Image (cartoon, rainbow, N blue to C red; front, top):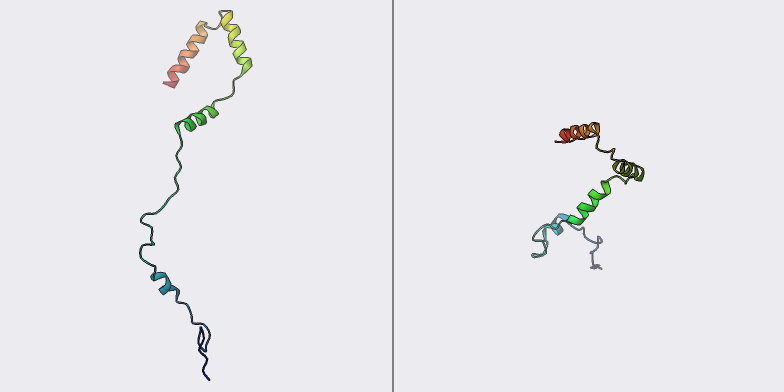
Amino acid sequence: MEIHGPGGVNGPSRIDLHRAQAEKPAGLEPKHEVRDRAEISEEARLLAKLAEVPDVRADRVEELKRLIAANQLETPERIAGTVERLLEEL
């Protein structure tokens, strides 16, 4: 008696992976590689810069208001210091 089934007498036949990979149907390969991309808007860039700005020091603002009101802010020493820092920046 002979037995003929899905795999024959010895069981299922072995799958050849190399051959299976080489036999891809035509037209299924992507034409180009798909990549993820993110775009950052100008508004988001500005918000990021704004987040880097230090918090307002209310005590310092009040001190400066007091000096301006008392006409003590623009002393020759302060002007010279400001000019010196400005020149260092440039």
